[in-house]
Length: 174
Image (cartoon, rainbow, N blue to C red; front, side):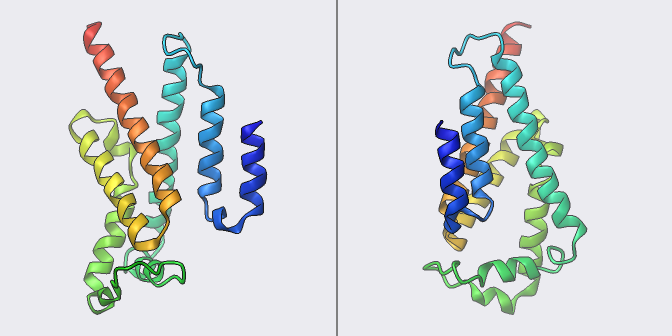
């Protein structure tokens, strides 16, 4: 019922129609289907479904950025920091004087979103997840997208802890 109400509210309110509506709906969906009993035999399957889902979301977001030119030349970053709602207390329009920084930020964002190439590897997993979390903190404070960033940080922390629990379980049973 909560999922149904959330979809109705998010579809009728333009403040949540920038993509976050999908992530909140998906989050509520997972909460609705995941068994409340943490010792359930079905829990590992739901954890794997969530892990794969997060990786698909990030991979295609990054892939989409890499096949376009606007992330390679920094134009997408420049447009984002100049959006009307991106009126943070920090004036970072000085970046327009340094197009190489815009390019680095654009490519860095696209590369960070090639998530599944790095989070499944134990050596790069923590670094990658924490880097993506830092990216979302930057998005929150620079673009004023606090709700979006909060949901994405929660997704990343959930992914991290699901990997940690899985790895400790696998090591304990080895």
